[in-house]
Length: 423
Image 1: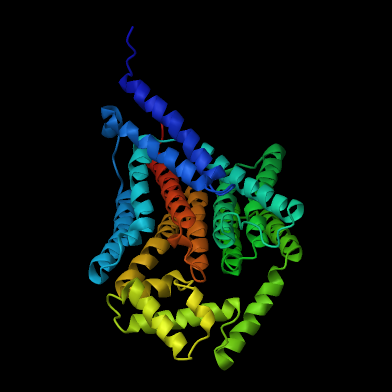
Image 2: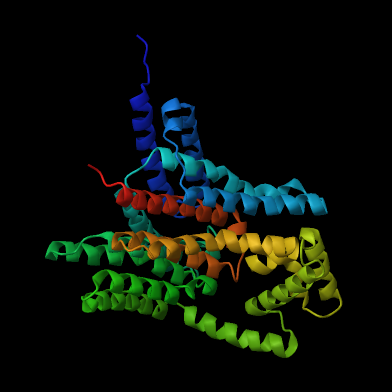
């Protein structure tokens, strides 16, 4: 007795598998060590479904999805330019290869649409799961900074980005009845979990994105509620209260104070024996190296060589010798790949903000939560990469690219549903 997969079954089975794996990718990817590799691998496994003719026939990319693919390819191409210009080792392509690996997901999500409620639920659950991990590490393990088993800085950025998307997406929940209002409050509290987790990492570069998230969310709720500004204000105050309590229960504020003092020390005497001083020294060296060849940069080895020469000349402290990166995606891209690298990095990181704001301008208010989710998510990564190359490490590049593709697909699906309502 032979078993035949029908045209209908191939789509049905792929949708079920993809729904499960996308949900798990959002929920579990940074909750334990190397989990991002596991679930990214399971996402890649779903590409076998392209062998089905019925799935391939369903692919019809929008201008938005084509633009996303182009932006991703531009980012990858900038690394190939560095490889060929400076004869760098092929390992330079390790990180951008992760971007290439996730491009087929755009096609698959276009062909096999999964339930948007499932994705929204996954973001909310993920934010709460990150909160649980942070609480466990802080109060059970006694960690001074949570997320070190993965990378505290990346963990902080990803946690806050997921929370930002979750908080925006909860605005799509109707809340006319008392039961619905209680549900909205509950979901908002659960979504705040990622903010708390991010704060407990004490990653200053990510935490400074929180005020911007609050502004975006306040605009979202005020626009959605119209005359019900009191209701929107209460939700906004709830977010501030949760964040304030978290900040009070961590050493984050002290770290911000130290940063200010360290920055003053650096500019007064180029003191680079502190976290902030090291960063400022690396940034200055990166800009100077990039200015030697502003169009194409000087490559990885050229940047390291220039930085080390400046240390040996006494301009910067020996602490900088321990670091071969600039702890800032933008100046690092400029140093290594010049304006070509800088423009592609800004385009890649800024694309979700541009796309979200463009969609937010639409008259249909039901689009706003999805547009705000993409905008807030992108804003976190744009800011976090000012003090760390979050997207140049495996965890960061996989999570940024994967969540970008998923949120873009979610927004596109919602906009398509509005244009072509079901019969």
